[in-house]
Length: 132
Image (cartoon, rainbow, N blue to C red; front, side, top):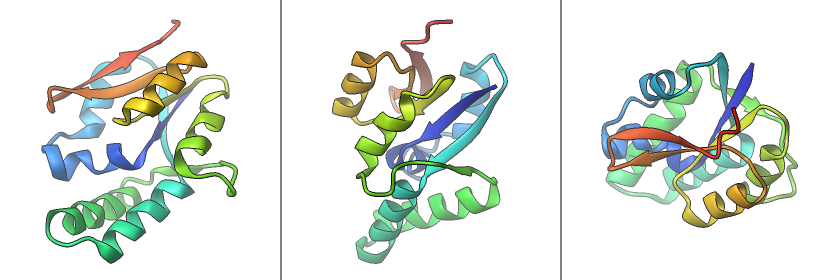
């Protein structure tokens, strides 16, 4: 079974782009998978929730509620690293896919051979770098 790790910006997609990330994951991933995030992403959402106003605040609140309601797991990640470095570390593990919108992170994940899920045209997910 593959693990899909959601970055902070992916958790914000339902509110910002009106895309159901779970149905998109089902559409793109024609294999068994489990959905996770990392503790650093939850912390980033908390920071946005605490300091954001308007759309950002609502998007972060929805993302936090979605994580709780959908029983998204929290993947083990090195707590001393920031979110991007933690995702790079977790991405090295076998059968792990990272879902992110961050261009620099996607470039680094591609360089290390980690599959990536990303949003195209603010409408649908695509899977990149998948060796299977």
